[in-house]
Image (cartoon, rainbow, N blue to C red; front, side, top):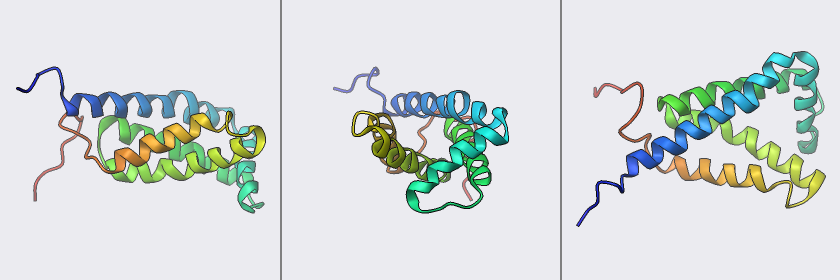
Length: 135
């Protein structure tokens, strides 16, 4: 007996749209709008990986990845490409937060990173804004 309430596509839609909107509105867009000083601060996170050059460029790129990846994740288009844009940003945030504050500070990026890795093994679900044509 299958319940109509249990729908995997609805669950994936909720996860995709919630993560996508949060990446755009709470992370990517605020950093992008704050300008080069905020980009530089964000780009300094790469120092934990031994990358010390062009921090403003890396911060701008991270903001752009969060916005583009969040939008694509939200609409369900280029699902895996969106996740591949977001995973490096979250991985660097995980390293930064773990180095600065330990496991408690790194919990948020770790959980979101695990959710993104889990979404890699799904398709975007039936409910998406743009459907790809079968060729």
